[in-house]
Every structure is written in structure tokens, then in C-alpha cells.
Length: 216
Image (tube, rainbow, N blue to C red; front, side, top):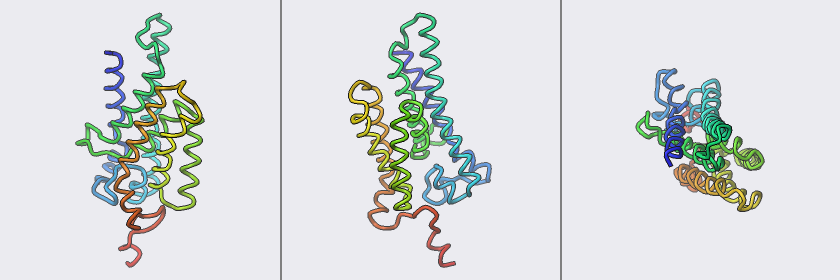
């Protein structure tokens, strides 16, 4: 139990390092005060440009990778030492992944105002189940290519994260199934504002300028 708690805390603190906020501060501002107010890559792209967005993409992905890698390292180390503290490694890796996402969404360092966890989730899923990741990536790319709505692609991928593991993995990987439900539901909830704007027809498409920018 102590080991699980330690992993939760470390992963959460790691996830709380919000790259978008840090990058925006390099530009002398706070990304949460611009655009959609979301501390994520899409809002960074629209507000600060491609270079800043690339830094956010890389930083958010690294958090997810590190959370899984460090947990995997501990699992392997304990196995080599002959201890059963991390006997079921999948449980610990999935837990670390979810808490890294939770940290990104509600960062303790930034008054619990973070992003929506899409990139960090993608990195975690890629580390845990690469096939699931590729399927979700296809869903995301197809939806965004057709509609130009990044938020809709994210929500559809989140729904896929809930459903696909059951179809492709069955119940042999229960920790990942639970992770998929929690992470997928969390992503959908974090996009509830986007869903309202999609319904109202006011959600901005990828590459679309603000109304004020179009009218000069």
C-alpha cells in the first residue's frame, strides 16, 4: 500500500509540471488568460504559435513517458531483488499513468488549473498498450481531418479508450481496462465546455481565426 501511495504521489507531482503554463511564462504571459483558457497544446498553438506548441507537445508527452518508465524501473528493480512489493507491475504502471494525467489536469503547482490531459494520456497509452494507442491515433486523425475540430477528435478518442480495450484485450488486462474507463471519462469531462460549444456551433476549428481577427 505504501508503494502504491508513493507511486501516486510521484506521478501526480510529475504530471503537475504543466508545460503550457511554463512555456507561456517564457513568453511573458499566462496561457490560461488567453484563448480558450486551457493550458494545453491547442490553445498554445493558437495563442503563441507553432514553436511554443511544439515545446508543449514534447513536454506533456515526456511526463507520461517518465511516469510509466520510472514505475517500470521500480517494478523491474524489485523483481531482480527478489521482493514482491511490486508483484503486479501492470497495476502500478496504470496507476502511475492515471495520476500523471490527473496532475496535468489539476496541477498542485498552478492552483489546480491545468490542461485536459490529451497529450499526456496519449504518451501513457503508447507506453502501456501501443496497439490501443495506434487505434486511438487513427480515430483522432480521421475525425480532425474530416471536421477540423481537435476537441471532437479528442472526445472520440477518449470514448474509444473506454471501449477498445474491452474489444481488443478482453478482461485479461483488468488494470488497463480500469485505467481506460477512468482516463477516458476524465478526458470527456474535461472537454464538456467544448461539447457545449460544438452543440452551439461556436467551437473554433483547427486553423480558424477568431471572429475579431477575421473582421479586422
